[in-house]
Image (cartoon, rainbow, N blue to C red):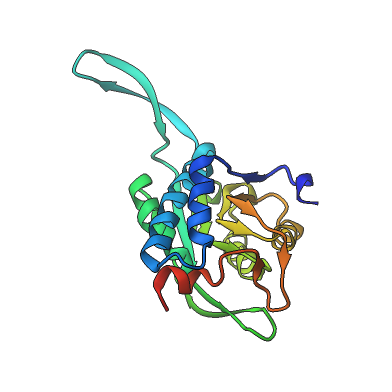
Length: 218
């Protein structure tokens, strides 16, 4: 089912797989989950940023001057973690992209309806030249996709092209991926694993349980 989505990227290598195993295991303590998650998020963010536009500049090394490429300094890069679990991406993101702005999005899932409930929104902002904005929405678990859809809509409503929006997740369900692409077919989704299904409570199976609880020991 998910193979039909050309802008879905599943990142897999031995380090990714090892990190996932550590995070999923029920006996891994909070520190172990957090360390594995940070290792994994860095790999995912490297993959997610491959499409950033570059420009040529001249620099001088200790030996000579030469022309090389770097990220275009005229674009606007925004990292939007969905609180609270999405925060695990933030430290790695600001190391990799120190020029990025962090825009937090606060939603929790109603356990009865499985719909997102807003409680915090730092996205309101003026947008000049929306085509120059590149958005990375981070959330470890893409379950129903409802929260991610609402987060994407915040930016699309400002005129930012879907093609400039990338959703970075660790583990996803097939249903969540399909729901997001049904609403926003041109966004990119980067994940480390696509699991079997959602259970009756909307949790990913096999998954890793509640990512926020396991990362933050709550």
